[in-house]
Length: 175
Image (cartoon, rainbow, N blue to C red; front, side, top):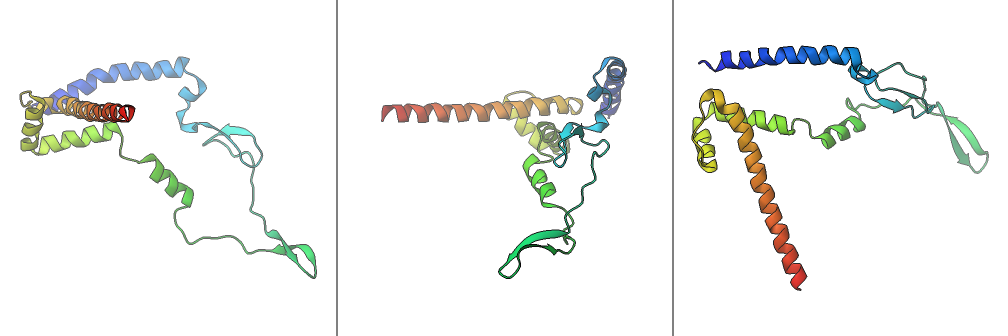
């Protein structure tokens, strides 16, 4: 298969542009462009100081060991509490972030998956080409075809949604 030499040739042609971009960022880029490993600026919830997300910590906070309680005999007083520990391996905030971001569901990921499906199953590739009314691409041209097919399917879906919205607005305006 002569697909692989073409892929490596394309990667090598992009290598020089990538190296020049990286050196330009190191020379003229902003602080965050030169140090992407430090992360975004965050404000400490305890002391309010601004710092880098992955930089040095500004304060060392400890959870309190006492709490304020009320009783009829003593009134308000401080009571010792045991150290807070959980048996959960992953915190709730991490789970919420994972659920919110929908990891692995980006456009690039979906196009790569579509490319792999087309490369493994030529029958699906034929159906996709027939659906778009184009000829079946060669093996080396499957990745760009996959990207075009994905955008074409998105456009079809968007058109369908817009048509449904127009129809709904027309019906609602008549009543």
